[in-house]
Image: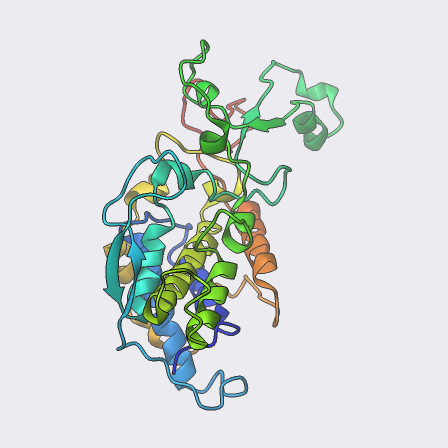
Amino acid sequence: MRCSVGDIWKIRLIAVLLVLGISNPLHAWDCTEAHPTINQLAFEHFVARLQAGHYKERFTSMAVDNTTSYQGLTFGKAPKFESGTVAKTVNASHNLSGWLERGGFDADMPEINMGFRHFYDPVYEPHYLTWQHRSFIKKNKSNYASEEAFFKSLQYRADDWNPNFEFGFKDRKIKLQPKLLRPQIDAATWAFEHEENDHSWMQGKIAYKAAMENNTALFGNLNRSQMFGKAFRALGETMHLMADMTQPAHTRGDSHSMYEPIEKNVKADMIKKIIGARHKSPEFRPVPEFEVEEGLELPELMKKLAAFTNAHFFSNDTIFDYETWKFPRNGKRPNH
């Protein structure tokens, strides 16, 4: 028997906790190795908790079928750019955990299109990725009653992300394509409800229900096996987006378009080495400081996770030093 979609959220929650517990300080990951590995370890932890009877009140007679293969569409390679949000896909066959891993990869494809949809700033509105216009005028800090008042005087103003500002092009060398480069979509919206996301959490639930009822008319030409594949890939993509909320840059409006050391350096081997076999313990809880209320809705869980990361960690381009007057991106100097 397969996991009920209404309760399979526990897999994603475990992914969140695994990601938070990868290391100290917090690490992040890429889509080719790290995200699929995180999804794999999360699934294994879910199974360990299931077998230990943690979900017996909700599942009276449930076993996870990880042997059956399901058909579906996935990306055959890692395209950087597509004119739309749907890139060329290939037919594939994977078991449940295999589709979760594929979802960890597919959520970033095509990279340029999807990259702008994986940010959620819980502090500032709009919550989607923006370009922050900063007024770096030399001011006398002693004229302000507090550091907070001084900081507010810098007049941070959110505007649509503009690659001409990002790369220092004053003559607008990059032709802006609002739909592509400035979609104005935050990660929470994209993960759970956006109509353009064919593998959102909602689409995954619809596909799972249709597969369980063998309702092949709902998704056109998809057969029952392919609907299961679509559902499990959607779950994997949702896990990917949830995990992105543990990456400081993704929760602090830091586009990190040129380089991000966390994503650059954390690979599958590092994650497996740090986690070891601890995730196979049903009681594994890597970050006690991150409390999750029972019954918390998934969008609220994502936002709470983003707030936790935003409040506890800096990213490369969101560090501000009052004493040395070093600002993010100020002369491209490193900040301490």
